[in-house]
Length: 159
Image: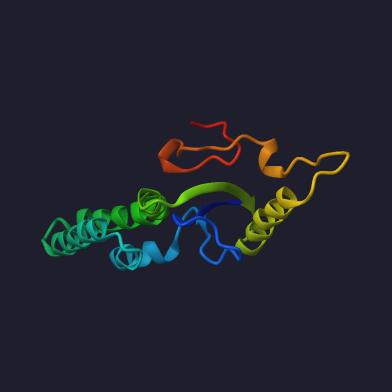
C-alpha cells in the first residue's frame, strides 16, 4: 500500500475538485532516470540546477582515470536522492505557494486513493442522521508535518 498526499488549492476547493492534487509519496522511476528534467518539469528550478551541475561533475569525474567508480557513485546517489525525496520537495513547494494539506490516504493505487478521499468528502457533506457516522479521516490521527526523511506517516505515529 502506498501513501497519497491530498492537497487543495490556495483558492479553496472548487465544486468539482478539479484543482485538488493527489500525489503519491514514494519512489519515482522518472525522477531516478532523468532527475534534473523531472525537477524542472515540477518547477523546482534551484534544485534542478544543482542536480544538473552535480550530474555534469559526476560525468566529468567518471572520465578521469581512477575516478570512474566515484563518478558513477555520485551519479547514482544524486538520482536516488531525487527519486526518493523529489516528490516531498515538490509538495513542500506547493505548500509554500499556499496549497493546503487536506489528508493523507493509504491505498494500493491512485484511483483508489481518489475514491477513498472523495467518498470521505461525500460522507462529511451528508446530512446528520440519528446515528452519526464518523468519516475515516477523523478516526486516525493526521500527520501535519513530514516525519523521518521527509515521508508523511499516514498513521501519525512516526514524527
